[in-house]
Image 1 (cartoon, rainbow, N blue to C red):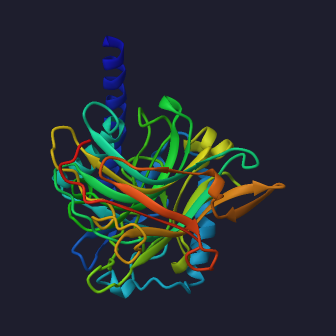
Image 2 (image 1 turned 60 degrees about the vertical axis):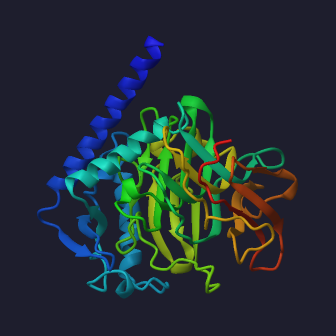
Amino acid sequence: MAVRVTTICFSLLVSITILSNVIESYESGRRSNVTIATIHGHFYDCVDIYKQPTLLHPTLDSKRIKMIIVKELERQKKGKSGGFKAEEYWLNKEGCPIGTVPIRRMKKKQLQNARDASLSLSNEYSGNNWIDFAGIYIQASPPIERFFGVSAFLCLYNPQVRGTGQYSAASMSLETGAGQKFEHIQVGWIVHPKMNGDNRTHLYTKWTADGYHKTGCYNTHCPGFIQLSSVIPIDYVFPRISDIQTNSKEEVLLSVYQTQYLDYHLVMPMLEEEIGMWPYEIFDSLSAKGADTVRYGGQVYTPAGQDLSPAMGNGQFEEGHWQLTCYMRKVLYDIEVDGNRQQVPPDDSKVQTQESRCFYEGNQHNDNDGYWDYNFLFGGAGGGEHS
């Protein structure tokens, strides 16, 4: 037990040191940067893309990363033909100037809360904490050897989060390994008041290369994820969400894929916007071999000592009714066939489902219609049921 406690304390010390350095870098680099505001009242510093704090990761090949950034800046300078409307999100109607990236400016207390949210990732599966998942997952087995990307349309909702430190998310993940060799990338939307300082639905990502023992965090809270977009930050607030009462549906298409250079990139294909990337250097097996599992669904977290869990999805689950339940559609993953990468829907014979306590999944199937294709439902009210 003493060895375990010492290891945990050391891991926390390393994480705190790294995160503290990142926060100091945020503060020291702001004086000469432009600051812009969103329609939601959030302020962002437009940080030089080459000087963003996440580039502090000690293993990064800075010359290689700079070459990737140069190509992205060239693309941005050619102009965007995507559907993102900066005038509906930024008060300056433009976002950050090309060559800079938006990094949220937070007060000291909120910075501490955001840091604590990332530090708590290593404890989510321990003690009396509750972490619930409802959705589908697929494990690699012949003829599928590994996975190299994930993609899906995620229906956007704003579930109720009831306690301090809780969150509710809809996500998709690339995973490999276990224990301290667990590596993963997770992306999606999240309601996380402690991390974001509000109850809105945000874009998010988190990653680790060792089961969150010494590496990994949310968004850009530690060196790792590199922001590339000058207009869509990694903690972007979705301006519109679905409404059951009016039967209006809002969605986001997210895609994570591995490049020929073994880096993973996050894009919003419908908006033709590349949000950012995870350099291959921060991972081991995930970069070299790909993932052995892909996962799609809802995830909620309830810290120990809290009786009421947050809602998942839209807070209800109605079997067979996509109008009344949160869903994902056009679910895809990237595999390798004869040396070429292909994006394909899940094979029904390989899909496994998971439910947890009062959170459910259902109706997983492939419509093969070009719109829904492979889709499923998930969600639940949460509350006081802990069994």
